[in-house]
Every structure is written in structure tokens, then in C-alpha cells.
Length: 288
Ligand code: PAF
Image (cartoon, rainbow, N blue to C red; front, top):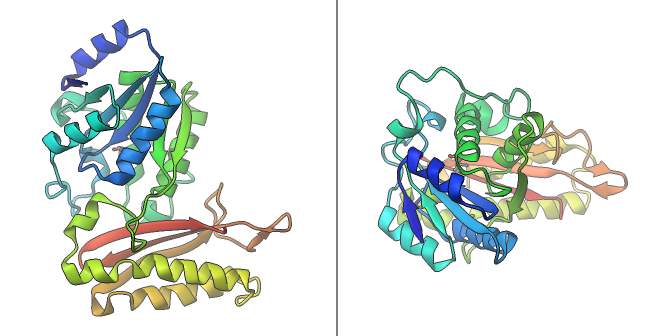
């Protein structure tokens, strides 16, 4: 496995590479969720293709009071993990090499990025779109893999690819969960033992709500279901939990749901963000 740390080197490598590339963008602190994306990239690339993983804690997607400095960094362990799942090249640049100090161009998605995490984290998706566009330009992949755990991010990236005509297939990777149901996230490492014990309650409450919706408990009133879940999630870690948002949205448009049903089938995405202590956890599930 090759490790590239400089932008110029990456450009040179791509210029000489004849094989189709499949990209897995990450911010490092890799866990089984990321590794499943690398494996999906390996499958998509096949024997003729090359898997490029990027490890870059992107400063522009963090707000002023967020965890940029504290974000876990473990490059040596990440490189070993990438090698073990068949990544061919890791690109791990420095922020000063990726962004000019007087950079004045960025990319904004103006519809899907506004609510949900975009509402709570203003500017977050501008940072994500900008860095992902840079990584697309630098690695020129035929396909890129993004996890469904960040459901809104996946939708925003798909929209950017469509609207800016990036000739790149976006491959979704299913959310990977711990044995107790907690969605894997680099931020789970911030949880204290008691918070960690309580955190799977988020997914349990979401799944219980899905079952209630299917059983007709909320008739056809998504807003009543949202209120019920908010109440339960506020209790998930006692006084340590605080709901950032709960949303039932259309899976494609991310607009608030008016009916659980579409063309005779239950169709929605349930998306939540909950603070457990200081750690903001996100999760989402579909109607089935
Ligand atoms: O999902 C992430 O880890 C990041 O948002 C991404 C896509 C690597 C961009 O920095």
C-alpha cells in the first residue's frame, strides 16, 4: 500500500495511474463502519481497479465551537487497518496543503443541506461539499463510497455530483452497528462508560417507533410520531441526554413528511441527532 501525504504527489500519481480509481473519503479514526466502506470500494474496483482512501480531518466542516482539535487522530493504526482491507493508496494530506490560506471559493448546496444537521451546524455541508469536490478533483475516481450513517451527507453529495456533473458513481454503504445496536462512529470514543451503556437506547427507540408506525399507532400523523420519539430520546441517558432534532422526512427530498405512505407503501427516513453528555450522536433508519 502506498501512502501519499502531499497534494502535488497525489496529482502526479493520478496522472500516471491507468487503472480506474474508487475513492473512500474519511476523516480517519477508522472503525468497522469505515472498513466496510473500504471493502465495498474493493468489490466495486475489482481486480483491475485501485482503491484510494483519504484520511483528512477537514477543518472547514467544523464550527467554531466544535471538536476539531479533539477529533481523534491515529494515523499509524488507520494505515494498518487500510492495508488489511485491501486499500491500495492512502492520501493523508495536511490542511495547509489542501487549502490556500486566502482560499475564497467554496461549494454550497442550497436545498438538502439546510435542515437537519445543516440547521444545527451552519456551514457544515459547505465544508463537506468543498472538501469532497477537492478530493474528487485530486483523485479523479470513477466511483466513491459514502456511508448511509451520514444520510443527509450522502444526499447532499449525490446532489452536488448531479448538479456539477462530476462523472462519478456514488455508492452507498449501509450503517454498521455495534452488537448492542449503537451506530459505529469515531465520536463514540468520547462517551463515558455510563453514557456508552445508555447510547444504544437511541436506536432501540427508533426501531420501536418504526414498529408503532407500521402497526398504525400514529394513524397518518408523522408530527405526532416525531413528538413521541423526542420525549423518549430526551430520557435515553437520563439528565445527560438532550435531543438536537428528530425528523421524519421523505427519503429523497429530505422534506418533512406529510404522510407515512407513498404509492401504497410505507416510505420515509427517520433521522435523529441526540447529545449524550457533550457528544452529539446521529442515526437514521428507513421504513423497513
Ligand atoms: O463523512 C466524513 O467522514 C466526512 O464528512 C468526509 C466525507 C470524509 C468529508 O470530510
